[in-house]
Image (cartoon, rainbow, N blue to C red; front, top):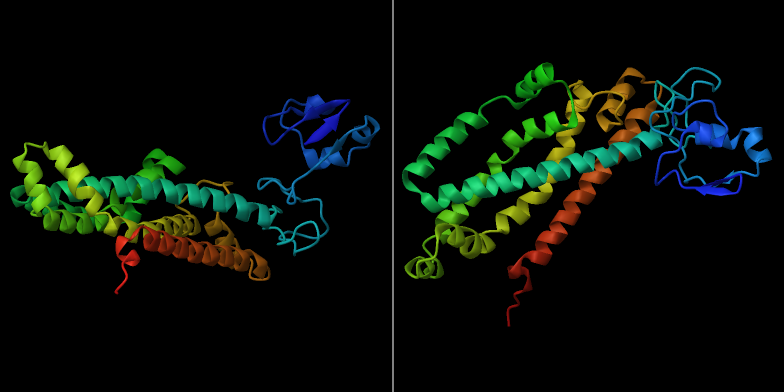
Length: 298
């Protein structure tokens, strides 16, 4: 939030050009430079910055020495080889990693449930044919597919999400197939069929609510796999295009700058903490939603 010439502005909510505050250009204002501008103070301007005011794309090349710069009061975790604040890139990298992992988990879960449900409920030729196709599909090298799609369509969030979604659903489909195969002969399912219920209703209203245990169990591991996959691809150079903030890129920079241990160390620590918390939250959700955990022996 800032005040300039009697007007209030909220840069966190909308875009303001630099000429709004006396600048020369219509690009986004550099608020850190604006804070130190004498004309801004003369106009009665003041601003409230976030605790970490740095942009993940801004390079601080005016500091003494050569980047990467060590941790300091202004840059708590130092900067990378391009002079960009490491903590800011960690925070933005966390946002991108979680968004990617959640989207990948949602897509792969829906696809895995649908395919596994159809196989387990139909059985016979449908199940046998589906299993052979899945076995052939799962034998494809996922990394080579990512490289191929990246070379043809370019690197990007949507391309990575599409390619990894093509393989991430396979494990869940196996579990859902077994659950549906087991539950399709239960008395309440047979009764629904005898009453003339449609197959779609039997699949998703009768069987699916009772077959959610594998889904709840696998969800946290799918989330963790999504974060790890994106980090690994960014580390290898096949992930998101630069200068997108990425933990894998920070780890790669840490290997290239062994004299700056804060690069790889901070990224690895952030990755470890995030994966551990995601697993613990997933375990808690599973225990809360598992009806067997509420059963008590008397």
